[in-house]
Structures are given as structure tokens and as C-alpha cells.
Length: 357
Image (cartoon, rainbow, N blue to C red; front, side, top):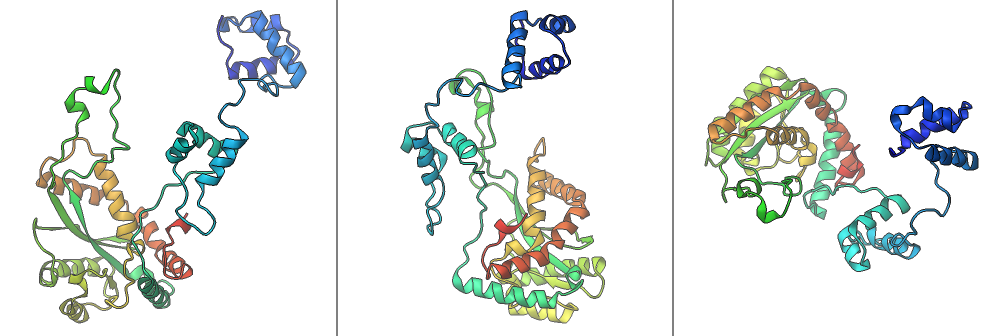
């Protein structure tokens, strides 16, 4: 006889509540091949408990792992101790300590303790001096960029893309039957050169605008001379095209950006810019290119199949990805810039990523 599924039980309960008897229910669904005994048992359960799916209290296999003792132990170990951040244990560590499976630990955390798991967010180290500078400069930028002034900011940055990026072994799995030794090596082994070839790009974005993707020649060192001679004129040309004559040029604290000759060049060629003592240090969390654009490009690059096999193909792929980036998502990222400034202020210059929704 066919197994009575959860949906079948609901269907039988509906018919039973409409006055159907067991024989009539069986006759209504001949293709289900339910046994008359099974239908009778379900109808009896409905009369006793009011539901075809509720289990009898105390029925089923007794709990052997999710005991009160283990639940209390997991609760103590899985969360950081009071005023001691970072003292929590992983599910594997707890499993080893309590001699239970990591799966049971996760089930206790979710079902019995009603906890949720959140991914850690990688961030830069921010010391006391950096926090103070971030706080002061964010306060000044909030005052400076009041109203719609933030729409005039042209954010710029550089990024390196590898021809063969590092592999995330947690997400890159090979499914096969049998043992690992039986899998063909070309399926299981991922070859990667120790020093993978790479391409550095420079670009800028703003609200309702996206500049060009500028490629830096391979093995080129971006110092102040190269930056002023090759990248800055191109970036400023993008600024004038996308924002007009009233843009505010932004760049981070890289040495080529903060050099005196670079600052002088910007004074002479920009209507306005955020100076080297005005942009918060160690703040990729405040640049839309860092917290959105580069990550989106990397995600799209990772999904390419087949992948580029040489530098020219890599450049072509990056250019296509850049061209296809939707301006709507860039606008959304830029709109959060002022919110991020305010969150940084609220966090007294510290990290605030955990406060973003």
C-alpha cells in the first residue's frame, strides 16, 4: 500500500470533516492506494486530537542528545561570555567538548535556544587614533554634504582583479559516488599559479552616473607621477561628463592620492575635492566602490563560464561586466553614503556594518 503523506492526511481530514467515512474517502481516491486501515487510524486520530497530523504527546523516539543538560551546556558555550567578546565556541568545538554531533549542536541552537546564525563580517583594524579621525571627519562631511550635495560627489578607487582568483573551498565542491581516490584528478584538483596574473583598474561612480573603466598596464607602480599623468586626467574627464562643472572629487588615502603634487594638481584642476585631511582613514565602508561595485563585479566575474584564460580576455570580461552594471543599484549604494557617515558618527568612529540592514 502507498504511504500516506502529510498532504494526504490534510486531505483526509478535510473529507472527514465534511462527513465522509473511511470507505467513502478510499473510494474518492482510488489512485492513492491507501489502505482502509490507515484511513480508519487517521479518522480515529482526528476524533481524539482534532488533527490528522498532530503527534501524541510523548510519542516518538526519546531524546538522547537534546537533553536539558546538553541544552544548558550549548547555551553557555555558543554565545560570548558577558563583557568578553570572542569567547564563544564554534559548533564543531562545542560538539567535540560535549561528545555530540555538530548537527545536534546546531539543532539545539536553532530549535531549543531559538538562536540565529550570522556570518562574520571582515573589517579592517581601527585603533583609537583612527577612530578619532574617522569620527571628526565624518562629522565634517555630514555638515559639508547637506541637502543634495552628496549627489555631486564622484567616488573613485582602484581595484586588482586576478585572472585566476583564490578559490573558496567551502563553496566549490565535487559530487561523486564512491571514494575521493576514485574521482578523476581533473575533476577534483584545482590548479592555480602561485602568482596569478592580474589587472588593476581605476574607475569612478556617482549618483546617476558611471565613469569609464581605466586599465593600468601590468607591473605598473601607481605613484604620484603616474597617477597625475595618466589616471587623474581621465577620471576628471569622467567627472565633468557625468556631473558637470560642480562635482566634488573623492579619493582614499593611498600615498599617490595624498602626495602634495597630487593635492596641488586637484586644487588647480577641480572645482572641489575632498582633501587628504578630510576623507576618513581606513574607510572602505564609506566608498560605494568598495562596499558595492567591486563586490558586484567580482560576483559576476565568478559566475562566468568559461573563465578568461589570458589578460586580454580578462580585460574584455571586466569591461563587459562594467558596462552591464545597472545604474539603479549604484544609485542605491550611493544613497546610503550619508547614512553610513551618520552610523559611523553614532559608533564614535568605529565599525558600523552590523547596523546596516
